[in-house]
Image 1 (cartoon, helix red, strand yellow):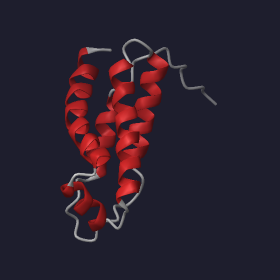
Image 2 (cartoon, rainbow, N blue to C red; image 1 turned 120 degrees about the horizontal axis):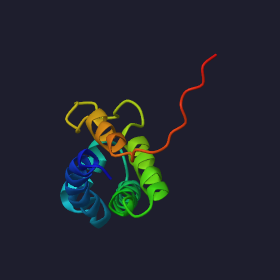
Image 3 (tube, rainbow, N blue to C red; image 1 turned 60 degrees about the vertical axis):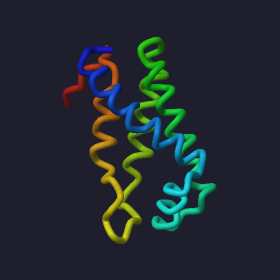
Image 4 (cartoon, helix red, strand yellow; image 1 turned 90 degrees about the vertical axis):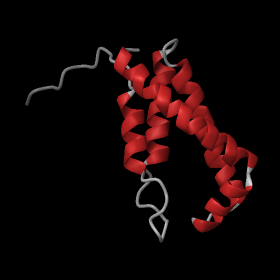
Length: 116
């Protein structure tokens, strides 16, 4: 990973680890957040598990590029699943998270775009 990718992956992991652990543990704050968004605590736990899997993939990404790419794509999809169901607009907006996740993609020998 480049320095820029590590600089983005580190803070992203630091933000997502406590949030995913709180979702998995279904602490009272996360139960209220789930109810506010119209989700069950079980559904919120699944989201926490998916976030934890993405974090593990980000941390293991330098050792295995395909795993890192899969984790980044998963986190970006998890973070940008459409308009927020939050009626009051108090939830953290999704674009910053998905942008940070996507920016950690490893540089690779991506094929050049084909010309018509």
